[in-house]
Length: 147
Image (cartoon, rainbow, N blue to C red; front, side, top):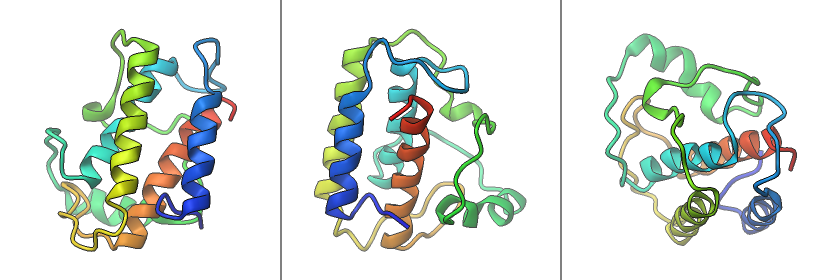
């Protein structure tokens, strides 16, 4: 499984990000490109402990979904998004793209961190799991936009 923390995988994500333009259309889902960029920032901020999103931990949700977060199985198209992570507003494409790039750069710079705070819903993840989850989420949405 690829990881955000592997140099070649990170570089691939960078290249794919650059290929998404204002004219790129989603192959599924309701988000436009700017909304997708905004949405993709949230999990990265959580990994960096810089998120202000509040969520309740639920043992059932944790048991049901935690392993799916970093398993090799791709996320399903049109899977429901928790309300805290929905990006439905009007966002400026270039600004959100630059913000996502900034957060990606910050997480890359912090890639050797072995002591991340627990995820607010799913609890502790290893460094390897954080890397897989972040790659998997970005890959899912970049594929959504055809790259």
